[in-house]
Image (cartoon, rainbow, N blue to C red; front, side, top):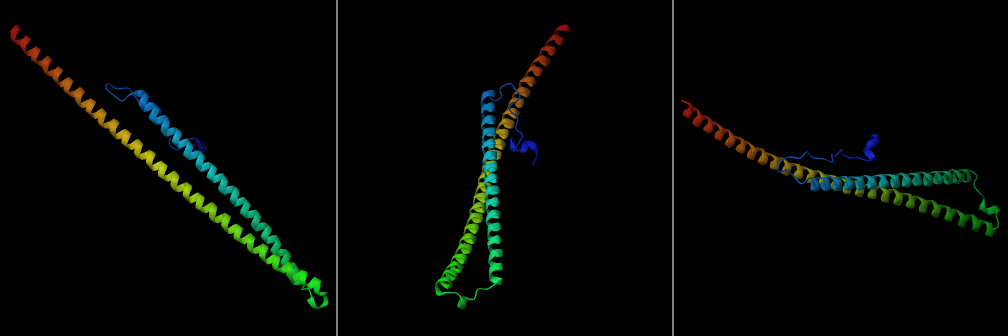
Length: 183
């Protein structure tokens, strides 16, 4: 991504040359300003989504690291098994409850991590789709505006050609009349 791509997705010009019987300059300027504002909104939305996805990814990494640390601790504990026969019944029950709670905490952490990742991916896909749809709409609007402007310019050019042709015919006719009077 280039440095300017965060502020301008597409370099749009904000001026149009003035032509005889052309577009209203204020209307064209307003339209282009609206397009640029919409592009800035789409860019800001995309940037916010990227930041949110990065934050969620960092949170996921943190949860995964915590999970890994818990698993390492559990592995160490499991390597030195506790002989429940040598423990009083109350302590044996506490160890069993702690083991059950550990499994529950791990399961909850894994479920939360999966939910966070799923939500982040779903939101990122939705925002990408919305941004693509907006970009496509803006492109289509721009294409239609340029087609209409091109058609108007062609009509104006044809009209100028006709006026010039009529003027040339009039001048030629006057020249013929003058040449007949001179002879």
